Image 1 (cartoon, helix red, strand yellow):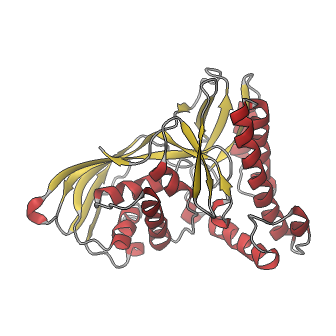
Image 2 (cartoon, one colour):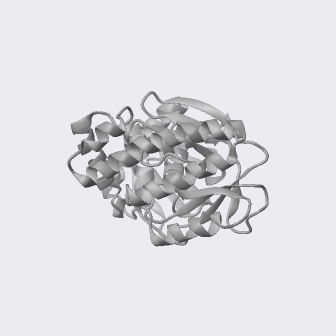
Length: 335
């Protein structure tokens, strides 16, 4: 493909909601997300030696020349998600296009959706796993956020009607049917957050410090966690170990139709994220309490990294009149 053979390309990358299993992916643990029926679409002309993208969410367009050597220095900041992917691919052929999104700004992995969509616009031809790993590396390189693999892998590998039980150590994906007699409802807290400005990297470093003492948290016991001398590291490790257990229980409960148990695991997860991992906020806590007080809501929890963003609830159909119902959807594709 070269400048004289420019062609139209249209791609879509869904957002993702994580039903349970947060801050476990970067320690090789278990997560239970699903791709959703909202996301990021990029339409444009492929060709030329630059990337130029306007966005319905951003006042300043992304524009940079190829190849990219320093994506972390690109302005405006949102363009770094595009530039990081271009840098990881090493491409010299870009595109000019328009980006549109119907995702809330925080909690549903809009940045990872932009990355995966950009990879497709730039012609990435690998497997969904290869695409996810490339976009994870792009995030690290361009923004400095040391994210795990969950967001990119869910967005690249979504299956209609199914949530994904992902082992982030083996990268094995086990699809789980989302039953017809429940709804997954997403409610934005109204509290914006930016991962690059949050304590996300600090939390990951604390988990790694705990692992230096007791070994991989994905296989650590609570007894081993209790032997940690540092109270903060002990709390962080306790969240990861108990969260992995909750993911497994949640998956079994959802499959068995035991929605009360599944909802309790979500609520326990939220409390652990607040108490042991310190990533919840008073706004998120109040929203979870408000939703759980509604008859027919089995459980709710913050979703994503925390520090603001969205809450996800498991409910009987039609009981909530706020937020939106998320449908488990296919992964990113060229349209």
